[in-house]
Image 1 (cartoon, rainbow, N blue to C red):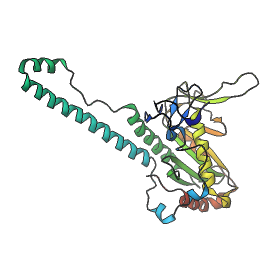
Image 2 (tube, rainbow, N blue to C red; image 1 turned 90 degrees about the horizontal axis):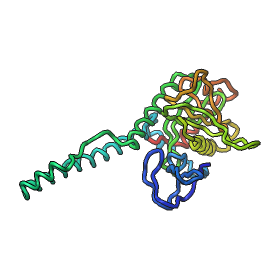
Image 3 (cartoon, one colour; image 1 turned 60 degrees about the horizontal axis):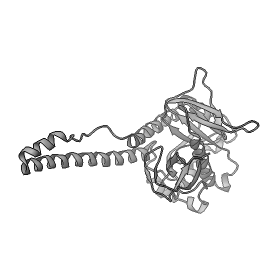
Image 4 (spheres, one colour; image 1 turned 120 degrees about the vertical axis):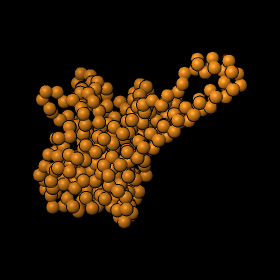
Length: 298
């Protein structure tokens, strides 16, 4: 079971590789061996939704931001990529200066030392940095699919108030609101019951790994959107969705459900969010309200 807690010792996020100091809040499994930062785990500070007061946002301010799918993930990737490249280039430059200096100071021994010392290379980007680019690509793919659906309104890359976390996509359709988290993962998508006899404990597995924390993250986002809707739209159903780009579903594709969150593939998403419902006349109204409460993260 994964829960939000103050970790006892320093670690790195299993998703993005971000260093986590002892004492900070993070998601940890029951063994304490797998730790995820609050952003990857689905929350910045806690699993509780912010208060309605925090969610209030000026409409004009929100309109000045760009509503771009994958915008914040792309920005984070570019920032990390540039920082990583600068560090690699600095190491190369320092190595060149060192080789020149040691050869001037000790012509013979300096040449020997230089020959025996590996030359630093500017290699491929690290996995944590590349993960942000991959995540942005997944969000863009989901946005492309949603663009083909009719009768819906879509909000991309919305910032969670009081947090650095974001919601990839919010769809307002005839049957209600859908909170969609896009994931570009490879491997089989499956639901496993790991409970004991007479006790059901269904978990979401991706490529053989327990990814149930993704479900908890979506549920947290659903609570954020529910708070943003407020009493005025309190009767509107909200559903959580995980859309896996690149996942494997077997010979017979079948959507998966864990804790009420639906996992599906991109081409199934348009039909899923545009199904007929009793709220078709309020789609635009609900979308305007959400845009006023949740500003773009880009």
